[in-house]
Amino acid sequence: MELIVVRHGRTAWNAQRRFQGHSDVPLDEEGRAQARALASLLRDERFDYAVCSDLARARETAEIILAGRDPSPVGDAGWREMRFGAWEGLTWEEITAGYPEPDPEKKMPFRIPVGGESFDELCVRVEAAVDRLKAALPPRGRAFAATHAGPMHALLRVLTDMNEEESMRAQFLPGSVAQFMLS
Image (tube, rainbow, N blue to C red):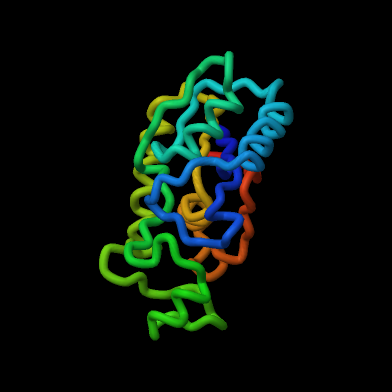
């Protein structure tokens, strides 16, 4: 089984380098252009199943990419971005100025304040979403997912046994694509 994963297109908060988490920030015009470019790139790809985060930025990205094609994307909260609690809407500079815990040199692993989600919790959630996806796929099927950077990092950990630090070295820019083989 194969999984093609895209990170949603850019949002205003991406452009401002703000933590989005579960905040439902829509795509901006650049993000819609990125989604249209992905639609062109993936136009000849066949998918047996399509899923997306239920947040607007990922849902709109999936809808643009898969417009007029089957299958339509199924929204699944398991593919949501990591929940950043009180950090949502803040930049890294605002976080390090207001919260003494993060080490700006290390970046990961760090502890999210109250209301946030740990990377381990994110990985458990993403692994369950992958299990649901695999159950919906036929043998040797191909799936599409539109999600966020956090779940893409979690996929690296869940599907390749990378540790947190290794999986966080990958960079998933808005509008990027990754391919995974599922067993």
